[in-house]
Amino acid sequence: MKHLAAYMLLTLGGNTSPSADDVKEVLSAVGVEADEDRLSTLLKELEGKDINELISEGSAKLASVPSGGAGAGGAAAPAAATGGDAAPEAAKAEEKEEEKEESDDDMGFGLFD
Image 1 (cartoon, rainbow, N blue to C red):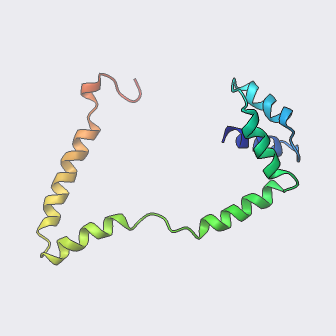
Image 2: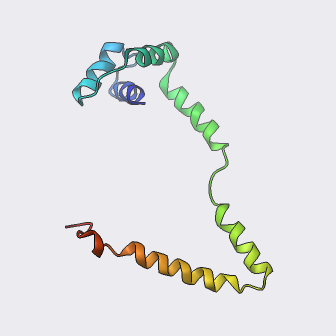
């Protein structure tokens, strides 16, 4: 992933075809050592391809992947089927859990200390 990130930084900077030395230079600037095998594999895979086209193709594929939102609906359905008695109890339990999470007294520091 670090090799790809360095490659993409170089292309954003105007280098349309970064070499292995270019990628190594970017990685060494932040104190990271390049892995020769992974770098050569990445460069072979990207050789002759436009990174912007690859990104748009990947975005189109990613858009078709279903994600999130369905988990909470399944828990509410049994409560509604039983007359809704379980819902207030679940809400009380969630409130107690949230109160515990918000307290940072026992850690000895706050977020902005």
